[in-house]
Image (cartoon, rainbow, N blue to C red; front, side):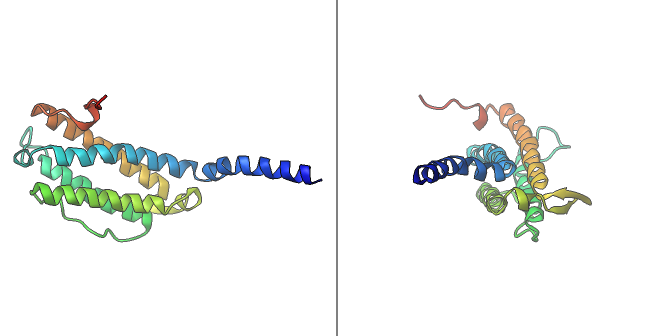
Length: 174
């Protein structure tokens, strides 16, 4: 009898991690996706020299600093919606100083990380309003990640126009 109980316990303990992971599979995927873009954004803000923060490829588009500020503002706003809170910070799109913008971006990323860390698949399924539409919290997080990727693409173009290799294209040291 004890052998059966021990065998049953071994089976239960061997599937427990898979069960726990499966309970938050969507949340873990959202965290992974945001993790991929957040590093590139942070490295971009740090890598580009301050004198290029005012750069605009054409007069009709945002400057580099406006893009960094816009992403920081959006991270705070969108992740706050997923958290059911008011955005804790904002107004960075009109800032121009590299140090202030890089810090704002990193702070917004840390805020989103905290919001995602507070979710699991059950909490992430709760509905909130984003731009007047009902969406699950995890879909709001996914929207934010897509928004970050969209603007990282803009930033890559700006960097390439100035001869800067984007973080996502850098080769790691071997």
